[in-house]
Amino acid sequence: MNRIFQRTVIYVLFAFLGAGILFMAPGCGKKGPPVPPIKDGDIPAAPTGLKYTLKDRDLTLSWTCVSLQNQEQGPTVEGFEVFMATKPLAGCQGCPFIFKSLGVVAMPRKSFVYTLDQDLHYYFRVQTLGRDNIKSKVSDTLYIEFP
Image 1 (spheres, rainbow, N blue to C red):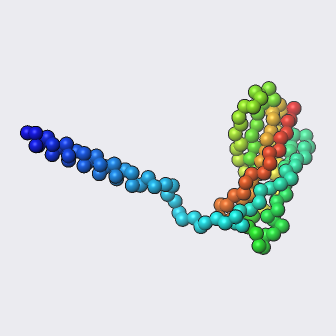
Image 2: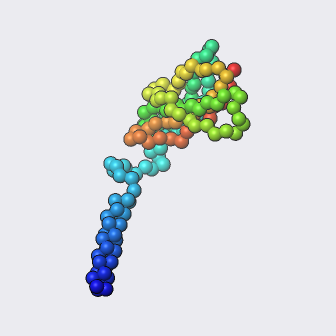
Image 3: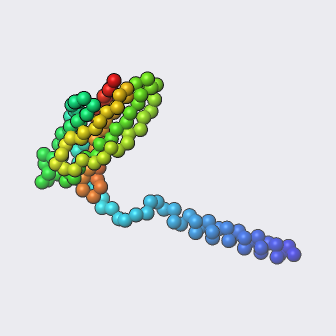
């Protein structure tokens, strides 16, 4: 009886070991289509000079992009993604806020129009979008208080 018990324990251990190997094997990382390697020269420059004009409640964001000056040799720019975060004027100081995408501006435009609500702090950022879903770093944050 002791020998049968030992064999059963060994079989159960091997079964658990085999199951563990099967469950661990597919955990090697994110699966998806192959992606070509990215060189620093392929990454477009982040937008700079983020400015705004205000007419009534309509805010027009505008920016410049260094990558557009050298389109033939540098990375190809296909558009810009605009991000915004808001906080109430009476909100707590230093509270975290989350940037959400407002949309994509296709080339050759370098401006975005948004209608503001009252009594909010607004934070805007812009990111350059290149070919093959390559993105730049985000621009500096533009702060607007709209009473």
